[in-house]
Amino acid sequence: MNVVFRILGYYRPFAGRILGAFLLLGLATFLNLLKPWPLKFVVDGVLTSVQGNIALPFLPGTWSFAAALAWTSGALIGIHLLWGAVNLVQTYALIEIGLKALLRVRTELYAYLQSLPLRFHDTRRSTDSSFRVAYDAQAIQTYFNRGFATILGSALTLVGTFAVMFRMSPKLAFLSLAVVPFLMLAIARFAGRIRRETAALQAQESDVLARANEGLSSIRVVHAFGREAHEVDLFRREARESLEANLRLSMTNVASTLVVGTLLAAGTAALLWAGAGEVAAGKMTLGDLLVFLAYLGMLYSPLEQLSYTAWSMEGAAGAAQRVFEVLDTPDEVPDPGQPQKLPPGPGSVEFRGVGFRYPRGDEVLHGLEFTVAPGESVAIVGGTGAGKTTLLSLLPRFYDPTEGSIRFHGIDLRQLSKKELRSRQALVLQETVLLNGSVRENIAYGRPNASFREIQLAAQEAQADGFIRQLPQGYDTQVGERGVMLSGGQRQRIGIARAFLRDAPILLLDEPTSALDASTEKELLDVLGKLMSRPTTLLVTHRLHAAHRADRILVLEKGRLVEEGRGEELLARKGAYWRLWQAAGG
Image (tube, rainbow, N blue to C red):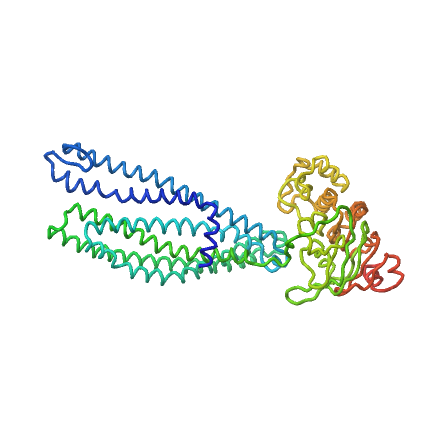
C-alpha cells in the first residue's frame, strides 16, 4: 500500500487535469451506455411496423419505415462518433498526465543516482541503475494509465451498466453477477504470482543488459584475447535465464486469461439460457434480450479488464519497488542542513587523524595528519594498495572519512555543500573520461559558460591547441564515446585543458601520466608543472621523477604516513622513499 501512495504522490501536481479527464471519462461512459438502444428501436419498433406510422423516442409525430430506419442508423453513427471524440480527448489527457509523471520520477531517480556517493555505485553495476531509470520507472505510468484510470473507467461502466440491467430485469441482472466471486478468487490467486515473476523477469532483463554492455564496452580486450565465443556463451546464459523467466510469466498470464475467459463464458451462457426463457414466456421482447446481452458484454468487459489491471498493477508494483529501493537509499555523504560558506581565494588543506574503512571492513587509511599550505604542491607516493587514490577521493567528498576530519579554509568538508566544495577543485584522472560530444564541449565541461577564446587559451596552455586544429572540424570535432577517436595523450591534454579552464584553487592529479609512453609523459610533465604552479596541488603518482617536481612528498605505506619532505631530503634518509626509488630503477 505504501507503494501505491508513493506513486499517487507523483500525480498530485496534476490533480486539476486528472479531475477534468475523469469528468470526460464519465461522459464517455454515459455515451457508451447509449450504444445498444438504436438496435432495440430497430428490432422492436422499426421491423415490427413495416407499413409506416412508426413512433421514435424523443422525436414528434410518426415516421415511415425508411425514415425511421435512417434516423436510428444515424443515431447509432452519431453516438459512436461523439463517444469516439470524447474518448479520444480523455485518453490523450490521461496518457499525457501519465507520461509527465514518468518524466518526474525518471528525472528524480537519475538526479538522485547522480548525487549518491561512489560507495553506492561501487557496489552496483551501472547498467542495473540505467535499467531502473529507463524501464522500471515506467511502472509509474503503468500504475496510472493501466491501473487507476482503468479502474475508474471500469467502475463507472459497471455501475451504469448494472443500473440499466437492473431496471430492465432484476433477476437477470443479479444472475449476471454470479461469476463475480469466482472472478475475485482467480484474481487473488494469480496476483502474487504475477508480481513475483514480473520482478524476477525485470532482474533478469537487467542482467542481460549488463552482460551486453560489459561485452561491448570491452570489445578491444575481447578481440585481443580471442574471447568472442566465451562472451557469446556468457550472454547466451543470461539471455536463457531471461527467456525462462519470461516464459514463466507468459504461461501464468495465459493460464489466468483462460480461467477468466472461462468464467465469463459460463456467465454469458447462463444468462442466455435464462433470457431465452424470459422471451419465450413473453416477459421480455427480443429487442430487450439483445440489449441485455449487449449490456452483459459491457458488464463483463470491465470485469475482465479489472482482472488484467490487477495483474498489471502487481507487475508494476515490483518494478516500482526497484525504483523506490534506490530513492530510499540513504546518502552516506549528505550535504549539511545549513552549509557553511567558503571564503574566497586559496586556503590550507588539513588532514586531522583521517582514517577510512570500506564497507567490507578493509581499513585503507590510518590516522593521517598533515597540512597542505595555500599554493603548495604535494606529491603522494607509495606502493600498490598504500591508499593514495583513496586519500585523493576524500577531498571532493566522493567518500567521507570514517575517522577524523579534513578541513579546507579551517572548515570541516562535511560542513560544506558538495557543490561549492567541488566548484573549488579541478581533477585530472589517470585516464581522462571524455563525453560523447565535441572537443569544445569536453574542455568546457567544468565551465560550460566559458567563451570560445577562454577555451582556446586553456587548450594552448595544455599544448592541445595544435592537434585540435588539425582535427577534421577543429574544436567542433566529435570525440566519440569515451573519447575513442583520440589517442591517450590527446585525451590527457584535453583533461589538462579542462583543469586549466576550471582555474580552481585546489588541483587534484591522480596518476595523470602513468598510462602514457615515455615521450608523451615527458611532454605532459612540463605542462603539468605549469598547471601545478598556480593552485594548491595534490599529486598522486608512482612516477617518482614526477613527484620530485612537487614542493613536498608524502610517503604512504599500508595507509599510514611514514615519511614526508622534499625529494632530495627523503633520498638522503634512505628510508621508505629511497626504497621506492631504488625499486623504480633509481
